[in-house]
Length: 110
Image 1 (cartoon, rainbow, N blue to C red):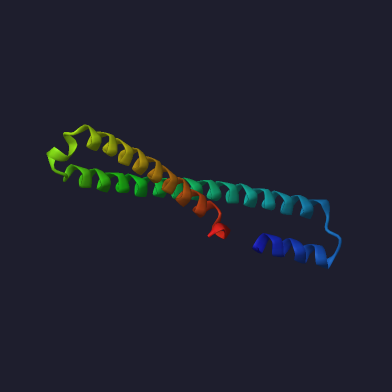
Image 2: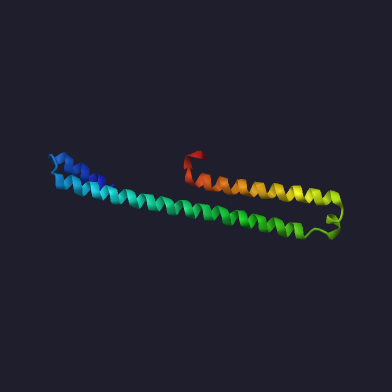
């Protein structure tokens, strides 16, 4: 806002010289580079946060599966059900991770 305000004030006073236009153009370029870098860092942070939350969900699910009795996993039906449950949890965790990262990038999609 400071750069843009200064530029508008300068243009409002009189017809600016080439040096003034070049100065403000360079300042706007630096500002755009800074905004781009900060947007990239924000995206990396939100993606990392989504990965950490998904990892914690998977760890908690593994702990709950390991608390089951051994006899539960002995029969074939339980094994196929276990595979289906693990597959569903894995796909759901991936979906949650993608959703968290997407919501962070687009705040108007809530």
